[in-house]
Length: 266
Figure 1 (spheres, rainbow, N blue to C red):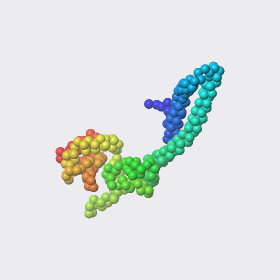
Figure 2: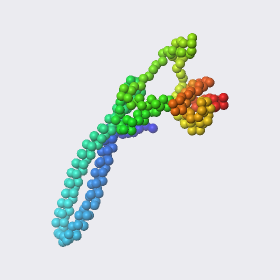
Figure 3: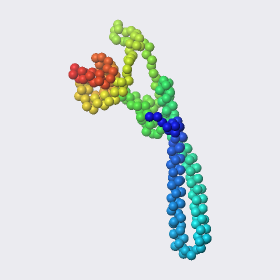
Figure 4: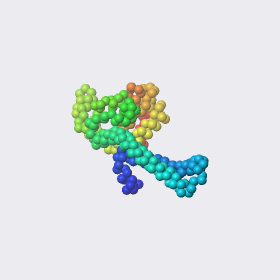
């Protein structure tokens, strides 16, 4: 669905300007509502008090002059009050929007640099509040495989690094130590299909097939599936981890289901 030109211009604005515009709109709407209500209610209330004061025999000219004086005084005082209120509210809105937008912009810039491959980027405190400072995993996602490592994300010098595999040193046992090319240990081909299906597979297995998981791991109860990839599945029970290798590579949810069924029946 294509956006209208006005929607495109609005989307190009940063978070700060959009917050400021939204809050300024609220202030202006409130000021306009105040003015309308005052003009509708105040003259009637003033006229009622004037009649009850015993001045009903005023001439038409005097009454007209009194009404004009009241209207002008009301409009001038309301206009002055609204202008001052809008200016003060605008200043506060500008300060608040800057305060809210700055850490979000810094976090967005950090994630963008990381997405571009700059994994030495510092993950500084985003200043989004105590909830994020106390639980950095809310920002960077939980580590299903090593949950005890989530505390490291709070370190000031914490960095993520990406390793490009050129060669691997295979230690397969005595007399079986050798170098192998990176292509021999890297997974090639379509990895996205299974990765997209992984959350649903994990949720289904952990909710509906606890006994099957225990059978596959073969080390008692309490295990949960934490990951699945083309070559196998990972499991965790508190501090213990386990991995079950597949007989062949799986590339989608259907193949994964077939291989898991085979393991359970084995």
